[in-house]
Image (cartoon, rainbow, N blue to C red; front, side, top):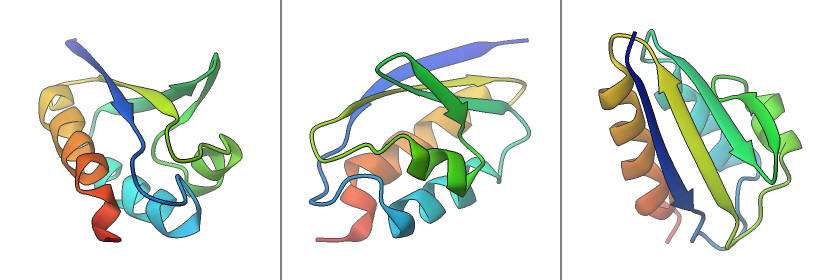
Length: 90
């Protein structure tokens, strides 16, 4: 089973608060792959809004997004696109 990993920096003003966490989980849930997000050694389920918010990831935080499964490449690419677009906030 392929695993894809990418480090992303949060550039949006308020980081991974409720709205971006919701969008992140919505994108993650479109894929069958298992998606994990790591910040400072803490690893959470990328499909869980609550767990993503628990990371308390602020602007400038670096996240490692790791997906394992058949569509891991597409999942990580879609999440990276969302993060790089600053969650469409600006």
